[in-house]
Length: 398
Image (cartoon, rainbow, N blue to C red; front, side, top):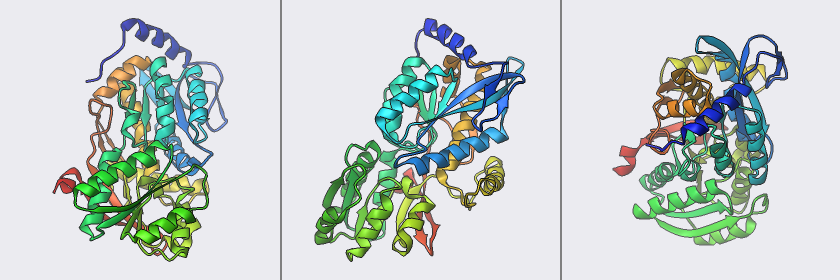
């Protein structure tokens, strides 16, 4: 179990949490003003611009919808309105620090996010030093929670995801692989490393490893090296912005290897920007709307599609939106279990929280990671993401 800080800090945090509640006028996420009742602030720490802005906004949509479904919470016999305080970490480690500090100054009792492991890691110490619990949604790098008693997450992590994709490759006869990763990006480099380790342990051969810089748009040089190595599969965990560039340029150069990646590639903009070249891409992800796990998931399926339509978005549910929703209701349950607005008490409650979320049952291990062992494998076919199979820890050990 995680060790906890001194009671003195807890008492100070309680004062800070009270500062985050108000019976006076407050501005909500949507720009509306709340003037009645008490208010609890929850921070939304996400990229809404930058290379991961598209994915970050999808997580935000899940949180905003959850806030519509569950807009209040009763603590100590008093009903509080929950307001989301959104900051844009701009997909940048430096900006992430500034955004995290802003949330601390706003007096939030808990924080949701972020899409992107690098920005989550950059903000982790700030949240811990302030004594405010954070719940990541799709930040899959082990470094997000490792050694941080205040960071939790509702997704599976990269050692599992890398193993899942390595198993998929070998089980389908792809015995030579190339890996493309982004320099300085914790998610990309970490997932690529876990894939490599698992793939080689299964008897696969890595024939090429290439890296690219942030904001790079021309991949012809590294793809030339990969084409010469002639892999049967290319594993390229990267951002939504980078994905269609890699896909299109690879196909333009006559590379016919299967192109695969992790959870970040489950985004319709990749299909829109890569066009027909996206056909056959394979990826791992957290959720599939075709098989609701429970009543919460079934209700979310209907309601969130209506919400997406109402804001002008396609009624296709991204897995990260489901995780954003789950992060919100997990924090909400912890507030209920603690029966307190003290961030320290909420953090304590998170250790033992259990909910039936959209993505399944959520509990946390000693590192604050979700106890999850199920991944969905999808492919792009006829311009849509289509379910292929599910994989568990037992399957990857087979």
